[in-house]
Image (cartoon, rainbow, N blue to C red):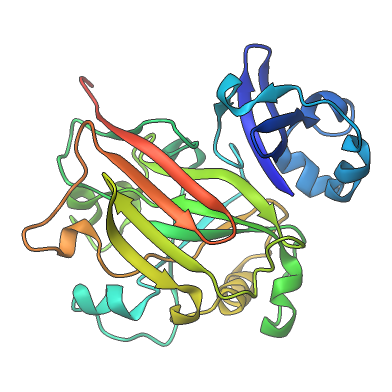
Length: 285
């Protein structure tokens, strides 16, 4: 299944996408769950196919506004420097443990929504990534069981305000300006796209390929990321793990290449689709 969160004139909701058709699950699940986060936490996703059998779609994709796949997830864990090519381009040493930072929900936008370069910077960089969403929580999850805890996979653009990110050793400020990251267009459930499958990731800026990799090149695999996080905190249903960006980021190009007003950035994940966002420059504080 391809599951989304969206806005319509009647308000926020969530649904299932089938081609261009959108089935409103928020209406159908009233009294049970009001959001995709709650649906995951209530473990009711397996009800949806039977519920929608023979149903008529409520909208087409051009009649809705895409929200981040999960507008308000419990936590967003982002792995840093998790591809060798990205570590090498930044002259970073090898590491025996993964590095993480957190993103805030308000730092994200949905598919087709503008990513915003803040007035405080002109160093707005793209970082195409693959994200997995936790469906079953747990503490101290073994790598051998980690994939059983993943409910779905999606695209992520970990947009980075580089001068703010690199001003100190703490990356959090440059990763959390409002509307600088993108999350979508939808989550593909694990029964349709197994998270263990080797997957291709591509980032394009104005149609030109900037990044390309496959998940078998991750320094720390998805099971290792899940196991490591769950050692220091219990994972919860709805938590998001963003797995890292490959080489080719704008900061490390000669000359550096940053996103600017009027650009269009795309992150494509094999088996998921394309997350596409225009870029705008914030006009005033």
